[in-house]
Image 1 (cartoon, rainbow, N blue to C red):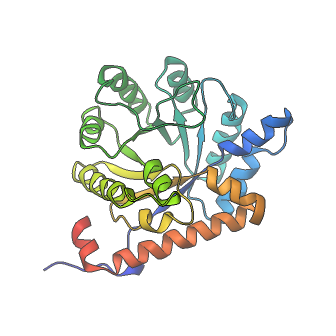
Image 2: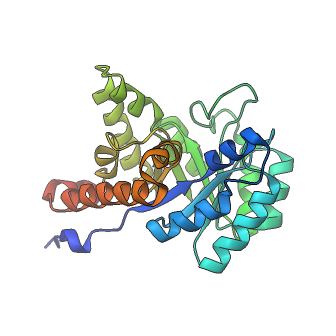
Length: 270
């Protein structure tokens, strides 16, 4: 006999807050304000389950000193730090020195404005697998930021990642622009999450999520975590960071409760 899970018993959906663009604003003036570590404090008080920061090779926003401060802060507060990083020897050494709770390997090109698409794990197996192995050996939880593509999901499993973070950017952009392919892109996310979970991978999602798109994404039953940054930092200009995060948290929690009130959703996640 199957056991139905009530909304109150539903697996929690964690919220990771990416504070990169607090550093972008700071760096525009070359000053020490606003401080990403202070934003991380506010985020955790507002309901963030963890903090994400991307230390780029060109240091365009987050700096090495920021990672030092965020690593110390999250340890004191007992919250996870998710270090987003390119697959390079420099970034591997930094991650091994800090040993954050998690490291998310992402594609990175100097000329891009923001991360464009997912990591090609299938095509770069021999480059990625050793980095995954060394991080795991150091006790770091390894995530790969990928497209919801069966080939990439299978490759992520093959290299030994703990987690995949599915790239939601194409879906979110299609929704904002009112394009008809939004439904197909959402179905691709949903099917990718189901496949990844069936392989024993923990499934996260992120990129481009806002108030309009979060409910649909949060309702995917296999997801364990959403990582959201740019939209919330932008919204904070108008409402404050605390209020922006609390609203996002409420939308996520409501969507998750509705999902687990639906028997069909529970069967899909079983």
